[in-house]
Image 1 (cartoon, one colour):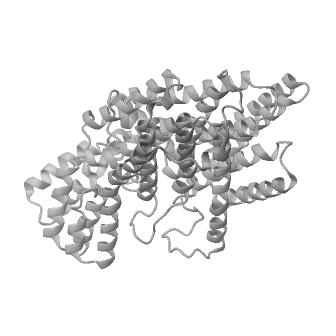
Image 2 (tube, rainbow, N blue to C red; image 1 turned 180 degrees about the horizontal axis):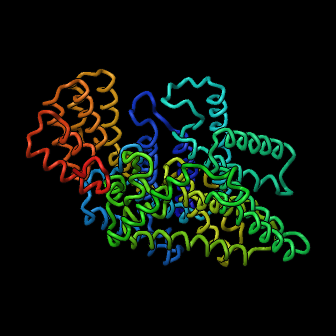
Image 3 (cartoon, one colour; image 1 turned 135 degrees about the vertical axis):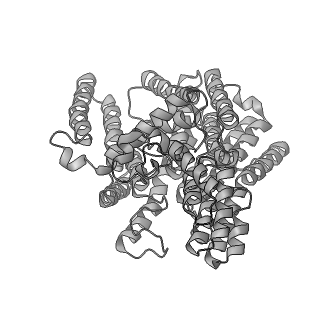
Length: 557
């Protein structure tokens, strides 16, 4: 009974981590109102879940040993990269400004994945899919407000991006919501009222996706919809013929779609975007980094430090040499370039376990349509399609890791000898039961640890935000010395000093940047062009800039 109480409370935490991470923002107190705030939620709740599990490790006894090994391997390899890649430790731990996908983020995500499997409850997995759909409701409403031009928040961009900071992230997230909504919409057991509500949400979200101009959401929805239809046909007559027909149609649609993305064929006019060509540059650089640093990578969230050197001559001269990126725009390449091939293999193993579990559910369950399983699998596949061309944005990525854990847990439930009813925790019985005292204390310690680990970048960014508004140099200078401050904050302080022609202050900040972040391009460039830099400093800076950006014509002479 104690283990059931623990799993029930664990499920309660996990069902809110997705909605909170996706929706939370703080434009009133942080310079980065999105990523670092979302990291705070993920870290705090992940460590709460971890410490709950540690309070009674016996609840993991039924968990597949392969999963435990994969999670342990991924975690160990994260720390190996952290220690041996050579990248700045604070940058690796908390991640680059505006991304925050460093060691703490990935450690928290893999904890959440593992905890989602440990919860192992059909009611919880059903609530998880409902939580995704319900999260889409306030997101959609806010997007409609943004589209109408009445956004009360003064963002620097006047586009519909919800609480995710970018139209592509929003498009992908709403595509996932649409897939989950469709999974329940086609279920015969869904009531008329729910069908109307789900249809309204789905159609509205498709409109919002179309208004963004981003095709990511359409690809997520299209790939997920194919899976939903395939599973829905399972319960009908002529099952094999219908499913083969669906697979054939998917193939016939996929080929011209892929060709269109490559600017070929009749679909090119509708699908090809200039950003796709640019993404190939980012993919090439990520692959190059992986080849150069195959064991430990360039360091967690350190892609941006190596991009100029790894991109090659064609990418350098395509447009402006100052066009850069701090992510490969492909989650798999991000992981391999940042953490090396072993980390990528460990990550792929987790995805493989989810696929194997999905096949196990499909094979062993009755040939009837299960909307919960359909929603989890179809949305997960849609997310993986998005992962091939996009970034691990925490507000979207949290769902990918939750759904991966849900697929693995679902497979373990279906393959177990116990029936479905036994594998669903009795909510009424659990509601009145409190956690054991030791577990409650451990959970509280977990919250404290998780928030403590993320407090430093959160606080540093808030300090810089307040200092930046004051425009007072002393406050700005002090704020960038706070633990958790990033290379970006330090660079902005140097830029401000340069703009105010306070060259001595700018020189001091530039030297701090190059000392703490030896591969920071901005710091070396500032040293080269500051009028009060010594000749020896300028020679050193030019040499370093040639090393960091070998094909940039600006530094060839």
